[in-house]
Structures are given as structure tokens and as C-alpha cells.
Image 1 (cartoon, rainbow, N blue to C red):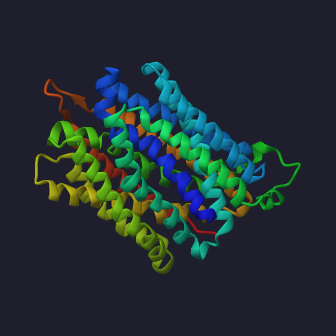
Image 2 (cartoon, rainbow, N blue to C red; image 1 turned 90 degrees about the horizontal axis):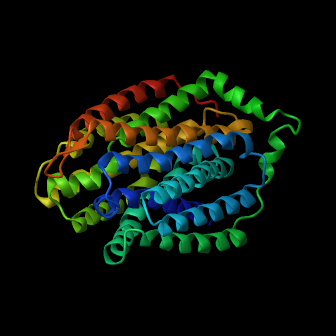
Image 3 (cartoon, helix red, strand yellow; image 1 turned 90 degrees about the vertical axis):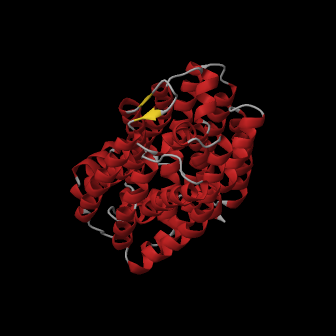
Length: 390
């Protein structure tokens, strides 16, 4: 039940960012913004998440995880509703930054709870279960959010997320027990800056942070712009894009738990390398696609979703195993910061590389595919430098 609640929280966290990507064209038209300004919205969100992830190094292991989870969800709820109430670009930009700040801490806390509860030999399966929330978000969340956006307003989904978060908060109060066992793992008189020093001077942890940053930077130089590219360049409708998310999410729901089980059985590193190398094909195809039969595009985009989600399951499990339990929560918070800053940087870089021509088409997107492939190869190299100590 705890994993189910964490998966649902993860789903809303994913939806809150993905709906911006899926409703790209509607948002740009309504707000009257440029392509680079849309990139700034993504960057503001992820930059806020990165800041909170970094700050989590100093407080994440210092409180009852249940109380902290409730506090962060309530803050996230208020920020999401504020975004839905924004009347212009500036207000919406501020709301996205605040939402990202609470979301970043939530992601780190989710991973810390999973790592504390589940032993290493079964952890990939647990992370695979929670990672299936990406698929659920795509299968149910994105179509429902797009329906609300198209039939009411593109901000309507944010109010729906607020309602779901309120229900989840009540469920957490009754389902999740007090979680204070981790508090005994940190000396009471320890300087809070000592954990930061330990992380930044441990080569194994630094390789894990670089490993995560390279992976996320590559895929998020592509993900935020897929919906807009499919409508403006390839010629599909918003309904077609919704179907892409639905089918891609459906197969992700099925395969994510299986990938976690395979990673536990055959080795996290082995499964990661296979999926990471396979990612290169959909990376290049999605970013250079011209009009093709819709069924073929569904296959390509579904493969893209499967691989980017699938490679992060063994990658995340590998990262949880490079640190002793005493510093795990703080390290995962730092990892979340790196992850979010990489998302922000990826979206910003694509905003600089690409531009919209007089026909409304996104130009130079194929270079982002080349960049993602190169960063993946570098990430594989960084992964080989990591040593699992648990």
C-alpha cells in the first residue's frame, strides 16, 4: 500500500510537468509566447526542483518521513492550484517554479522511503513498480488532462491535480506509519554540512551524480518538445498526440515492473547498458521524423517511452547502492537536484538550438537527437566507474 501511494504521488509529479509538454501548442497560442519562453517555463519548474533537491541535503533525514511527506504534498497542492489560477505568463512562470520546488523534494523523499524499506536485492522491482506511474500518467493522466485542456482551458488540469493531491494526503495520514527509524542513523551532534562534504568528496557518489546528470540531460533535450514537434512538423493533431501518450504509457505500465525484475535477476548494470544503447534508435527517429503512417509513428514513440523509462529503473537502483544507508536520504536529495538541473538545462539548450520558422515548424530538432545519443554513451562510461557498496 505504501508503494502504491508513492506511485500515485509520483504520477501527479510526472503529470504536473508532462501536461505542459503535451499542451505545448495550446499554451503557446493562449499565452502568446515564443518557443524559447516555453523552454523557460520548463526550466523554471526544474530549476525550482533542483534548488529544493539541493536543500534537502540539509533536512531530508532530520524529520519523520511521514510528516515531511504530508507537508511537502500540501505545499505542492497549493502551488499547483496557484498555477491553475495564474492570469498571465509571469504569474504562471512563478507558479511553475514554486511547484517544481515542492516536487523536487517529493521525488527525493519518495526514493528515500523506497530505499529504506526495500533491500537491495529486491529494490529494482520496487522502483520498477513505482516507475510504472509514468505509464499510468500517460495512459490515464495525459488523455484526461488533455480532455480537460481542450474542452475547458489548458489550466484546468492543474485544479484536477489539486483534488487528487488532497485525497492522497488523507490516504497518507491513515496508511503510512510513522517513519523515524532513519533518524538513529545520523549522530545528533553531527554538523549538517558534513553530509554535503562527504558527498562532494566521495568519488563513487560523484560518478553516480554525473551518471544521472548525463542520462537526464540527454532525454530532456527531447521530451519537452515532442508534442509540439509532432503537431507542427509531422502534421498530427492534438488528439493524435494524446493517443501516442496513451499507447506509449500502456506498454510502459506493463514493462516497467518487468524491467525491474529483470534488473534484479540479470544485473542492474547489464540491463541498463542494453536498454541505454537501444535508446539511440528512437532518439534519432523521433527528432528527425517527417510525416509517416500514424501506426508506424505510434510504434516509434512507444519504443521511445519504453526505453527512456526502462533505462532509468536500473540506473536509479544502481545510484541507491553507491552510498551507505546513513547518508542515503541526503545523497538521493542531491541526486534529485542534479536530475532537475539537468532537465532544466536540457530544455534550455534545446530552446537555444531550435527555432520556429515562418511555417510554425521546429527547426534543428535532429541535433538534439545526436546530442542525446552522445550523452548516453558518456553515461555508460560513467556507470562503469560506479562501485556498488551495498
